Length: 282
Image 1 (cartoon, rainbow, N blue to C red):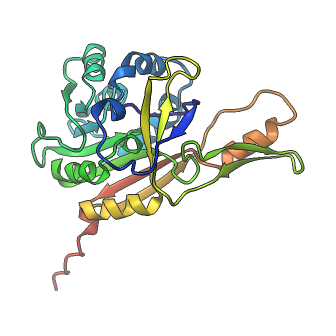
Image 2: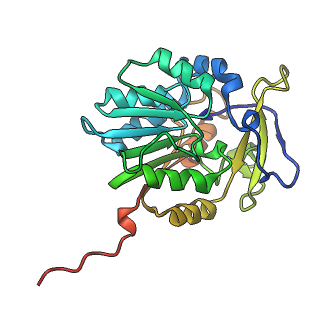
């Protein structure tokens, strides 16, 4: 499963009834595996410059901790988790991406092919921590993924989620805008509460058949499904872009908007936090 950063493409919404079961080709990113691998090797990506340092800070990995990288793609974050001392397994529905991950990674990072909502190859209670980075928005079976993450975590284990911010980055219905009258850069949001599925064309103007699907869900859907799976949110952060505009009349306004409007959302979920406090011993 590929992690979307800032794909600028032609988006075209699917017709109503998007929540019918989708075939693997529409929800897996295996058919664009080579393109995504090349993208992550570029400099200046949000994955490298923004998400990775914040995620490592919050996960606070200890040597020997077991980590499951769910929807790991070509293994970028799996390798970084291993570099921080963790014992890492990456899992993805795309065989093509897993093959790339195995080729790029040291032999002590283990990879498996499986959908995130059916982690049958993973034993119950096997991991200290699980991470889903820029992938949950591309998976249809949200409840299935969260239930499986709860199952594979040890007692006291935590789940770490990074998403495109659902309040400000709804595909096709949000975008940057410029107000000529006030000289302000703003974020236009046309709809938020409705769940939608959107086709994202990977190569605008070329190969229109190369697309995948992104699922927009409001906060309340994520919180309800997390609770249903047995997680309580214990930490939330919103991450904004550190990119700067080049010199120009709009630069100050554009930079101010980037600093105020977050593009990414981080959650940490803990099953243990949902339990009632133990009574104190007199």
